Length: 560
Image 1 (cartoon, rainbow, N blue to C red):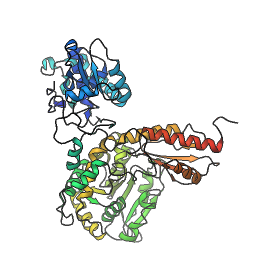
Image 2: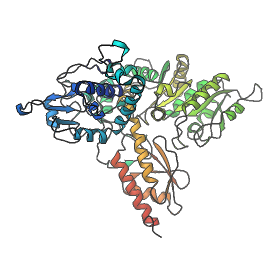
Image 3: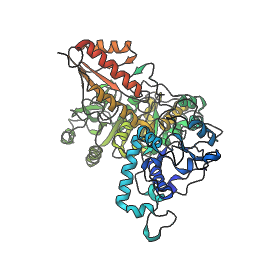
Image 4: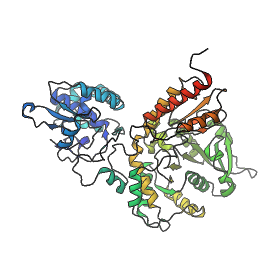
């Protein structure tokens, strides 16, 4: 088969059913649904996951009307016929031998179990599209707009197409199985930093990890693709400004966050130090921040010590926000007795408030407020990728109101080192000078930038899975006697309080014996953080260990 679809939203170069796409867009699934309904009268939504363009006819003469059908989410680039044939025997492969006499139960079961989130999104998108255009609009021929009817090929222009669905697991053969590409998608991604097939590289296999480390999302190891990218990176001298991979990373981050320019720095602490330092370039200037903010508590007072910037901490509310009225009251009047207020700092997501996501309208309001009062808005975006995923918006939209953002690359994305500062060209030029004074310039930094670029393409699109894992974990912990989860859990962080009879240090030590690594938090509590190395078997093991240890101290649940 392997023809190219006429739909604008689905154009791909295909060779014998194999391609190099790394994900499936929501608009593609909706177009597939309308195609299946029009061409084969298949109204069931699961058929949208098995488009004609990826299928192959059987060779057997007695089954000449049968086909190998291929799931476009499991194999977005398609498979060669030989690969489809060899994979068709397994229930988890996303490839099935289909004949009209055998029905579609296997296909329906596969989609409902493996791609429930995509099926739910597709259902909503179809219902919304039909609400706007009706059955006639959806069933019209895409090449013939007679009577103003809309074709399925226009779907990509009609819906929010930020939603992408990626293969979940890589089990067995390497990336690129059965494709005609001379270079596997993983190898391509290692060289370019983007565009590799998302068949699970960077997401662990479905076996439980040997060690489950939930202390932080900074503990992840570079994936094989990141290591290859580092080894093969094209480098220069970033102090002279000619490292091509660093330049590419900075350009990509500026574009991703909708700002004019970006600067690669070794750490998030330095990112905040430099950014707020530039805003407070006159020594003795003041910045407003939260009393529980990372800038105020965990960065050694560097802004005061090194930049001469005076902190004005305000009480964080439980959701991580600051009261706008209190912010207004904290802005200093023009009086020689006071420092001059220069910048408002917010943290997104908020670590010490349990990974809470600041509402988008709140951030927008703070941006408007700051502009009205002649001060800047800086976002400590240590987990801004998580915030964007939780809010369901692009990173650029998440930081639209901010004048500057420190973006961590080594937390949600899992890159080994680094952060970027984003802002205007003039602002970033000042940051570049201050980075030199802080000792933050690096020479052949392209080796690190390459890993970050790869992480952006490899891990970035599936950060929402970390939130799903944490949601499952929090739900399970809430059912265990002796544990109390701080609600709500909105991203990849959860705080868990222990019964007063369970000593937190004992719990940490006992969990470590079971190869689960945790960190004590405030009082008799723990902080748990999910990341791309935590899979569903890991969640199950953590729950089992907690249940066993709590029962060991408190007795079986329900016991008198």
